[in-house]
Length: 149
Image (cartoon, rainbow, N blue to C red):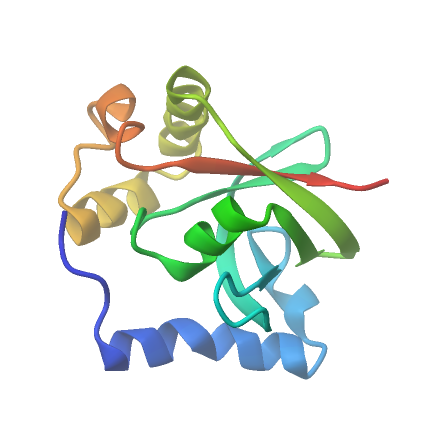
């Protein structure tokens, strides 16, 4: 597993948050969402913009690419309550970590729908997602955000 992104990469990754702050998040469609979560040590509200890898009955699913080190994932493990802004949907949600078989099914479908993005993820993370989603599911937790209706 490669090291987490450096400061410049983190800055670039945070740029979509600016769009959400100016209420332009809808321009990113339903492929990305803004996740609001509570910091596990600070108790402060934190935000992250994540790619939606699947939609199951109106519930977005996201992947924790740098788990177990990424903060938003660790924060959701400590407190699964969250808020989401996704397309025209906004509200509260509860995070549920999928088991390995369910995660592999989601990743297989993602590879089918987005082969170029999947190859980029392989390069970035040093995985074999395209050829072996089952093995990739062992190190890529998939999180279902069950939206309160």
